[in-house]
Length: 61
Image (cartoon, rainbow, N blue to C red):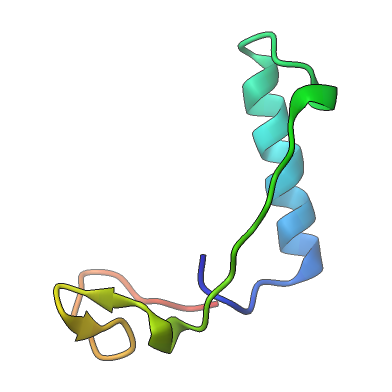
C-alpha cells in the first residue's frame, strides 16, 4: 500500500475487511491486519517508477 492514507481511512479498511471475512464465519477476534506502507517512489510498475508510470488510473493518496 502506498504511504499517506489517513488513520480514518485505515480504520474504515479494517472494519470493511472484518465485515467481509465475517461472511465466511471468520470471527473478528481471529483477524489480524498489518498494513505495510511504502513511499510511492519505492514502487515500480514494469520497470518504471510508479511516480512516472503512465497508467489508466491515477495514484493519489
